[in-house]
Image 1 (spheres, one colour):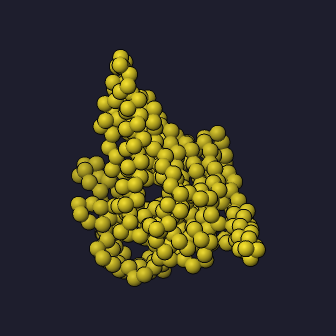
Image 2 (cartoon, one colour):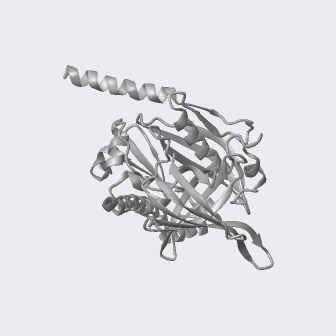
Image 3 (cartoon, rainbow, N blue to C red):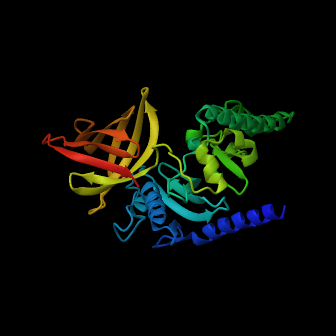
Length: 358
């Protein structure tokens, strides 16, 4: 028994030590609308670099150290969302030692303003973004989704029961009842927010209301907490190693990976973004930049087996009402490496493309 206690204290100490070495401060210049996290991890500069690059490129569309104001696109709505983005606060959550979970609160204003909360999780062994489906065995993903949706359905049904108990419902209550009865509950892991705790995983699924009905939505987002113990039989090998404190890393999905490489002799960095299905085909979006000028360029790609096809658009022609491409890429993925060609749309000249996961 004494040996078990000593071992537990040792593991706890390692966990505390690793988390203690990870510091988060405010990205500068800070204002009341630009409170954004920047990570410091002196023990692993590569992990620190990957996390900060991901956060700033994905959230702000800003390549680190590419200009004096990281918030320029967010503050002027010149980002790809064409929304003004304000960041009001962040929080570092308590997690197992291999994991960094950060909560961010802010507001997006396009046609109308709307507050948001989001959670971003990183593997501190590699600096990689953690994709929720990677945590579960492939044949268990539907089971986890069903478990989450059942709990949400129960939450909505219990609230509906309370509303319907009113014998003289107001017009507002009748509108609430109609909204919750029509609530779409087929949430998938691909679109569910989540974050780690010391002993549980918390899923945050979208609310029942659209923006126009939000004032009627007393339930808001659906927060579902499931203990690691209850999820244990569904974990993938990756999740088991991640949560146990093991240093053994596993292959994870292509989504939200950072890649380094070259087009011809010119060094580039790529952030693979969202993977999705487009007319039955596996597709993805990405951003890349030449390391010298740090200007973001968008890619739209398709994946067939190990083959990747990408279109790099140059500009949108208002008269023709279509995008004019700048280049086409054809490449093959082999493990964590990608090799192929980048072809200039105008000159038809081919350049070699080489990429590898950071």
